[in-house]
Figure (spheres, helix red, strand yellow):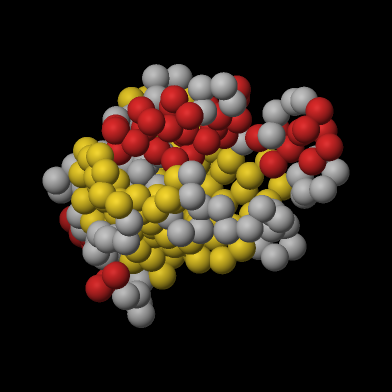
Length: 240
């Protein structure tokens, strides 16, 4: 009996010791957008749908350590790239999870701004649904942004940093998969890199006109108030 107990204890110890938790690295995300649905309905949209691919893809990278992250564009999927050019490619998201603040570089209506404010508020609810993403076991959570925009996220507690792509955060681990139906967009992690990562890049952006995010949001909402659903998507995309 004592022999069996010792074997069981050793097995449990080895199992626990083998579990590795990650607190720094670089995650690559594949971002897909359904362009046709994002354009909505109407004469203009119907004409343009024949000129652009239904889906477009691109890749972004999130470099992170225990309390900071920076998320930025890496490359397009050449097979499905949109003809609109470099929309959003100059945007940079820097999050400081310890101070619960962000600094972002955003291209808005032809100008480049440096936005700063508190991290966006997200109301999360956990579910029992699970999925494997990039080799990690993930659990599903449902969040709500901007009072009415639902976010479906999969996070892993094997990566201990409470972050994710763009300004998404607030779950007990790293977000590796995201779908936002009202933006017709998804983000899915394809790989994690730990060695050879440039952690010196974890600095806030500084190129642009400094402005509080809430002030610019008020201005942008006035400009896009007559743009319909497309205008709403533009606002969400800028301030997410």
